[in-house]
Image 1 (cartoon, helix red, strand yellow):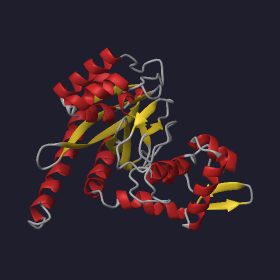
Image 2 (spheres, helix red, strand yellow):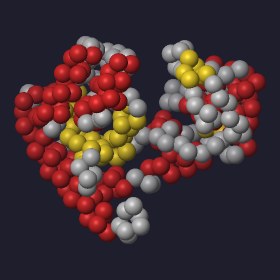
Image 3 (cartoon, one colour):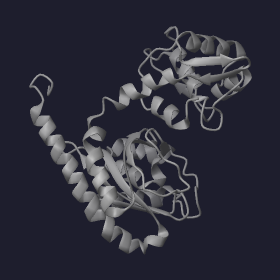
Length: 299
């Protein structure tokens, strides 16, 4: 069985054609049912094939043909063709009436993850951070409206929110998401604020665009983000940016803790210096790595 952790890793960045790449130009329908105009290079059959993979998740790791068709927004005939193609390629198996993902799909997600230098350099520093704070440490990047976890050192205790590499969470409700949003280009951020659906995850979640914009301004000004029980009640997190050698924010790193650890002010005072110290260590390693690159690789 392929777990939700695996599936999320797969979907971080897939650049593989899983079906006949016949181009289909024109209008497609988004998740909200609205029409989206695609350009001439858009491969609609690939989009549909990926929708079939996305149909499988932690709650539905085994699906019937009808289930896949419904979740992917396809006809049964189309879903059957895509499932057959995926099965022929070794990504899906069919146990009678039920379909499920094969471990081979790991190749897709791990091809992306293995190409990320930052998580590789960050893990040792994050382990030290988790040891010093006795809390979990995570690293994420922004993927449209979601943050994607690319490295994580869990705390040695159980929280309700189960997070692993590949986990995707709404950027607006997470500390790392707010760091990444606050350092996004203004035009992109304006578009994000105009279209994002701010759904409440708890009674504390920021659900108005004005409050979110104000919070992001504070993040940019202060150099860190603090989120207080907006994703899960009882859970607080603090995040800081991680920058490339050129100074661009390329990731965010956070520590999460329970409210019982202390007041918001105490948590910020404890975590921000530790996070900044760790981010600086990662950035120093990135600079060394950048200096060692051949001139041709550097551009």
